[in-house]
Image 1 (tube, rainbow, N blue to C red):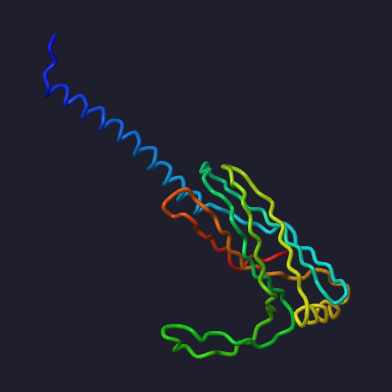
Image 2: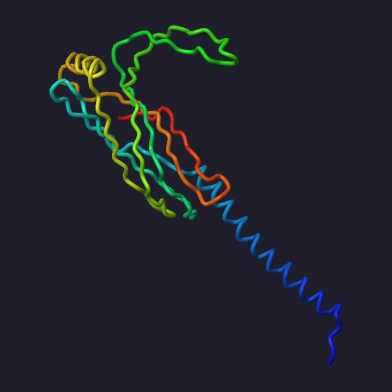
Length: 190
């Protein structure tokens, strides 16, 4: 039995097309899973604890980072946070940027006091359907510590401090995105 060159060519082309389709289907499913994982990625504040000692404050925040999807290609690289507490009303300057710096600065009255930002670097895998506990400690010193201590002492036994946290989670992905960041603004505790 003799097979024609045309039949051989058609068979090879068919095998290449089937192999390519299977390969592309796997890659496509992986990217769909990535998009779903990015949309469903979660960050929760489990606990905020603070210690006043010798005029300084150590604020420890325990986060839970959660990947509730089947995507398993994330690598946690860092968590960057700015911590606020609700205290006495005061004025802050805001604005001044915009297009070509044309927005004027404004003075805004707010009850939220910003503490110095903090960043922690990690190298941990975020597995599918998993949670990671991440502790972060803010060391507050100087004028920021004095203001918080004065505010806390005025509360007289009220230990509940309203905290607000703006957080950015940095993730590495084995895709064209490389490193990506997810922002979680205005997380309140308790």
